[in-house]
Image (cartoon, rainbow, N blue to C red; front, top):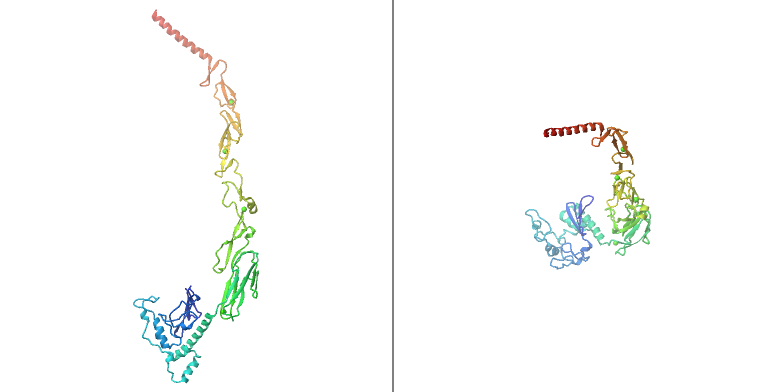
Length: 463
Ligand SMILES: [Ca+2]
Ligand SMILES: [Ca+2]
Ligand SMILES: [Ca+2]
Ligand SMILES: [Ca+2]
């Protein structure tokens, strides 16, 4: 429910979403009550406020359906109509605190003063009352009853206000018709809307005016033709028409706009998918752009960065492909080659080391003898006895470098060396020492002599 306080705070109106409204106002100590019913309530009301059907003759309908004549006396209306609608215990919509009930607020024995039963002292006094009250019966009644002139005048004022409101309620509101009522528009395109207005009150002269964006618009209010060429740049557009019948009947209608900037000519407008309208501009929505390959952004004006998702292998540079080329080729990015010594594995999309030493592959190395693979490269090595110089292997001259362990003579060979001994010496291959042949003879001779000695001993024993 929407609650509206009037400017001076003397009245409050509650408007329900169904269209019903209740206004309570306070003036000079008297509460006034005004009910407003929506068109949907026609023929659907009963009770003290009567039947809402623009027919006053059945307003005094009792709960059992009996209709009191409209010229009934106030006494008849009070007892035979009003009292019958008194809220029964248990039927009230209100909640009561503590011991209070519906009947706590009722006094069935109360008997009002009936206006048509007042006995005036004389016609002169009666006329004075009517003059003071400007012939407003309710004012005369209140004045006679309370002798409070201010209160009576307030009653007259309220009565006049209510009469105006009742008149407004009877006035049909003009209806605006827009063809089309919804437009899908692309920046730069011409939009044409036909605007017409009708009012059920045949004597009302309705004025129709346009309010909204002025740039690129024109409205002829005699033909009802509205034209508009929206700008290419997105902004909030509003096309609103107001009809005023001069009798308080004012209505407005807005063209529902679904706007598309044109997607910078790099995409297409999708009017089926729109952004949610701003609450302040409920009739304006922006259609989404479906960008062509290579473009992004709300209006497809941004060159899509093909490298954004890091599509290239680690350690490899990614280069974005400009949108026009991306659009025509379908290629969003390019990756630089893997670093030297690495190659791209198409399965894992990683740069992997090239095994330059592998045999049977088309990968080659320039090693003369041995190859040793390393991450990102390789090194050449040589057999024992050779020394590496880059990719080449050179024989180590062990004799010159004196790294040999020969006793006398060193002979260098390709990849190795061997030892020799001078004349008169022989080489012990285990120790590489040269042993004098003379020393061998002496020893051998002693051994022979020892053998001979043994033999002689045996001869001696046998002789
Ligand atoms: Ca009207
Ligand atoms: Ca790009
Ligand atoms: Ca390698
Ligand atoms: Ca050598």
